[in-house]
Image 1 (tube, chains in turn yellow, orange):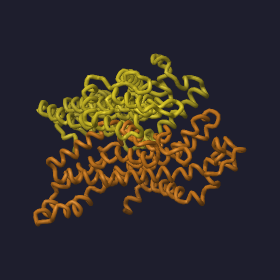
Image 2: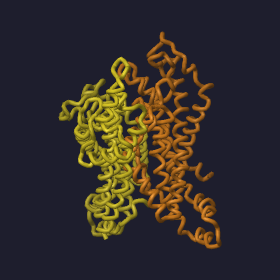
Image 3: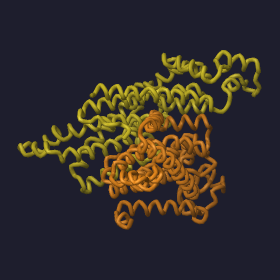
Image 4: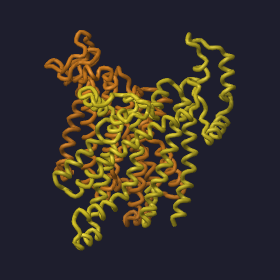
Length: 316
Length: 279
């Protein structure tokens, strides 16, 4: 049964992968401007026809669309995303490097999010329909409604400008944790809002279950009932939220990394767009999409594995 | 309908939304200044009785800009969500109703769009189409329609099994008739809930793109673009960023609060649909 589900899910990946690669590739085609002309244009504005033609041939840009696509896919499959037209650096290496930095930030953000979301979600569920619950729910709505770029500046003003606790922005060689705290906190609070609501509703479901009554009936203390029995079971659906949060964190990284000058994938995409480095944009977008797709795939599998009775059709 | 208005959460959010829409429509009457009016003598003035929200780096009145900015944000929100809704619901209902290979194709297409984290998809599209409001809206539609397709398909599958739908088909009603007369009215509440949450999301994303300089250009009054312009002065003149951001938050919160209240009131089954925070 699980095998059958697994095979079906793997088969679903194939058309999606083809589609996203095709879309990423076509973007260069729709893009305004001919890369060869842009590259070969001298700072004074003129360009040499012969040089443009030579550039086209060198980069395979004179081939028909489908040949270019097939060549590109063949290279992309082995991790060769081509070279940046601007810096001449390998797109794949640059993207991988940036992604590693985003990952560092995301792990810290996820930890912050869970640290906020689990206690609040549990308290909210236990105090169901009281003012505490209302406050938590409203807080969560506020958390998803606050623009992260605005929140980022508010936090910079407070923590860097007023109390001078943390650096306002920068990278700190990628290892200095003080540079990570503010961006991770901005990303983490948004995710926490989504997670908190999920934990709350899942906790509410579990608390109604018979085994909770049984556990109480056995005379176990409320603390043990909640932690050992309820929370443990309530956290299973939270696995999917972590998958969802990865999307949230990746999306947030675009703005947050740009503001804090963190050299991650979001920052890379924005910089590349602003400098018209289309190869880099294409490579990063494809890379992020594939990673995101695989993460969701594994999250699904883990969820199904943790819940043997669920063999749900993901699309319904 | 009246029952809905008695719900405190729904009533409160409708009042706030009504106020914002009123402000956007009548910005021309309400705004104390002309938004194109630059007064370089009075640039970067802190909030005062002349300028409640202060003035920006070109000496424009921020309150006026915020009022006109509501137009851009609400327009983008409503337009993107309406178009996405029409595309998504049409495809979702067709997929759910007919099933089979049509369903497979539509759902794999939806999965493909969902494979991109939404902000990256929107960025990629705006990057390649070029910057500007229309292109930004296209990019956001590309992200948003999938939500409606999935909700519509799921609800259609549910409705399809109901007795009245089967009876109607049995007495010879055409497929189109069944879909329009029976399926659509019965899937409307989840779709409306998603639309309300969707508008909030779209406004947030649009502000984010404009903030990055990839959406609405700074010459037009728009909240995200105002925040972008205010970045340079955020330590010396924080009011440049404070007020547009506050209004984005209030607007998005009102839409989310409304959608959330609507979900609690309308649809018990929907209680598991969570705010996805797609952006």
